Length: 52
Image (cartoon, rainbow, N blue to C red; front, top):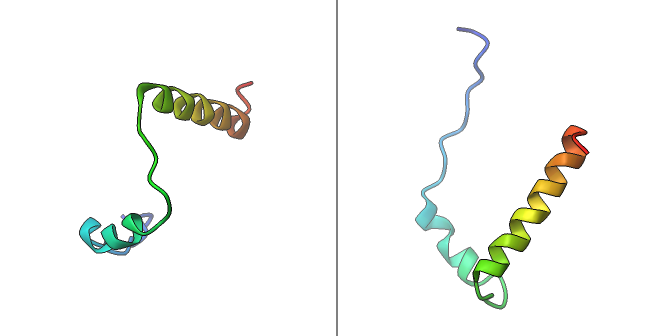
């Protein structure tokens, strides 16, 4: 079992909330936003894995 590395304990998500709230202008999350985001992620994944 020596092949597993130690992973630091994650921070509680609540501790990062102020950072997210103060990170810039809010954006409206719509079905179109999610479709665009999905398309970007699929394209990036294809480039990184050579699936294109």
